[in-house]
Length: 485
Ligand code: SAH
Ligand code: SF4
Ligand code: F3S
Image (cartoon, rainbow, N blue to C red; front, side, top):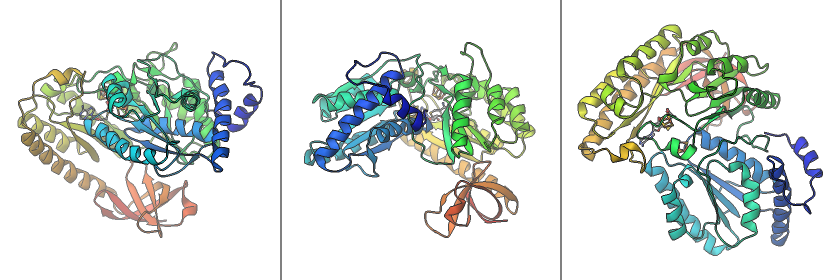
């Protein structure tokens, strides 16, 4: 990220009569200045500011990328609005399961009819789905009204791409297969003033056999620890009290750096930042979770009491076919060790049902693990076949009805365990970071406990962004009702 004052100083030195520099990020600063001119011209033609709207699908990485894209849009003069009637709409897509793709095609149908009424309207597509060549073919053929398509590796070029889009009537497509580049120091927006995601690594090298992410997000690259710390220091100075360190497999952070560093070491550096109150991270792969990390979490004052530890399946046969590289027994041993060392921690997970060859007995093993680990919450997904992944070529004799039955059986146990777990803090006093006014009842605010559970309690909006002590008075399934002490 770069602060506005710093950027303005640099922009003053740029002469648009010259060619764009080749070096990044200077090249993007040049295009930010140029894009400002274009946006100002378009606005004056219409006698009002140009508006933009973002639609983000998928995980926290995509949410973070959207903040960067919005940062650039606002910087070049767009006014962000909440609905798709805007002059520019961008869809930051996800392709982890097919239903995410279908939702995007649905939105495109709707926005096409809007574009027929407003021919100046621009439509941009980016994100994971765009890294799949078959998707691009389909869009070129059936959605030719789209103005701009780019992928996951070149979002930092958004200003340059916008200049290209407003200078051409043809569809602009810029997709990179992979990258080893990490371009920093661009403007960014933050959705919340008091908490923020921070990328610590990009891509994934694990190639779980069902998963498309390594193909669309490229090879694993860790950010330099100094850049991470500098970014956190800046946002803390701007009022952030909680950070979420983001990566597909944070436990393998730092292995590819020139001076290798473990994730646990990075956490210790982040802990030292004055003014930062809470540290979270996502996601942990069980195969790389070290004892060092457990000890650092145990002794930390800032790392939240929550670990998301995706199980995916409870049967070693399925785990092997998934290429997860741990057995049921290894996972259970790890979960028990974590509970033993950090008794107040909450553990959440992801589970896939219906992987090729998974039987009712295999799902029984998953249910056993759920009962034994006692997850505080679990996200359950029905397996979705992703073209190009090894699992897509595996035969699946299990019928859709059987898969649905297995899924429902699992879900029931997941919900029961979660309900029991969440109730266990009743009557205790815990600190909560107040995040928002309650949607349904404006006399309440909603806060998040260190273990990630939500508590609603009487309070006003002046509390938003503050960490306060709350007594947990009533447990309601997945959340508490409380009162400030
Ligand atoms: N890197 C993270 C997960 C990213 S994807 C990790 O390894 O934990 C988020 C979740 O989507 C995964 O944990 C998995 O449960 C689910 N998922 C991934 N591919 C899927 C597929 N093909 N079908 C169904 N669920 C899938
Ligand atoms: Fe996908 Fe596995 Fe990488 Fe997670 S670790 S993103 S599930 S390949
Ligand atoms: Fe989806 Fe891409 Fe995230 S495929 S889950 S948005 S990394």
